[in-house]
Image (cartoon, rainbow, N blue to C red; front, side, top):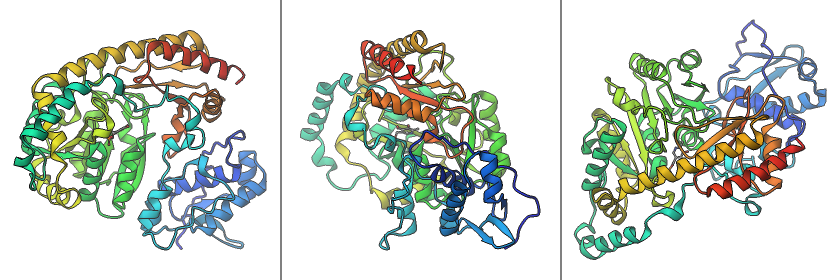
Length: 503
Ligand SMILES: Cc1ncc(COP(=O)(O)O)c(C=O)c1O
């Protein structure tokens, strides 16, 4: 084992005395995350359990137990008299994300892979899903502030039912044999027109592939563009669905920090300049809500051109922009054909529709179509036909206008209530787009504890740290506002203020 001579800089590890997983599990998790994300490279020496315990202010038992677990799982190696160092991991180990800290429990043996699963299958079981934060409590609380939930009560179901029925009666027989792998032609035409006008996307319908939501597009892209072990940039904090798609393809995740300007391209270049691909949410970063500014967009495009990497732009909810200059999609700025654009109807219509789309550079179409044929052949036709009419006959644009106004009122109501009730203690962001906002907590206030207190009062909101692979300098809470009325949001904020009072 080759070892670098330089000793380890003290890892930046924050442990939460109040959190439910024991300290040693938190420490194990942090170290494992740093090893998997490449922050702690193979061969890096770790401090002794005694030195680490004193620098973190925890007992030696805590550090010894954490090291023991890491040794057992092969993440670190040690020899008496020669110290401890980060092991050279097998590519499969590098695919792993860190498990949700909430799941960690000394008595939990579910991490042992059953023999029947391939390693990648087990990795996906182990993947942290932030939603699991409430695994035990979700049934007891309200979904008032949950993120990613559009107001599905406002959808024009009668019109939709009429369009579906029309096609079920009139057209189904004509399309009942296998159809175009890329999806229903008139729907691709309607999408190309729509995103050309509203998002500045340059594309023809021939460049569009209909997928099962944004997730289907992320999965398709990862399969076609990555080989096992290929490094890929992900935003940190970032969307777990994107990470999952990469892990499923065997990619190595490179967690690139996000700041108030969006993905930190320079940091990405330092961490892994040779990454094959980057998945980003530039219009409305998930979960922080920031919009990537123009200079970062140009820097990202420049990087991708230089190293021939692909940029995957997940534009999941930018149709809801309330104020500020609507920045066009990154794809519209790309002159080198490096951007793959993903859109979805999950937020603008309803998630169970499972319709999304990928806009790909022409040179990638052959590979994408061949792979999509193997995954799905194509999507079911009835909903695609109904949606094509829904768009062509103006219902879609009308629904969008209506929802944008509704969500704007809800955002304003939530921001006003939060500023009034909690503005002195918390930093309330005012999102220009999307369906959720972030309240940043002052340092010293644990978002996990705050979220647990809120949960005890029946309110579910996720800490930003649940979406992060590294420990964050500042944590915050995510509050969705799309699926509740202004009155409900105000009442929720009052409950939240009471719950946090004792904090
Ligand atoms: C960042 C991001 N991308 C994509 C999606 C939507 O995925 P899908 O279209 O598969 O429902 C979501 C939903 O929460 C999301 O937050």
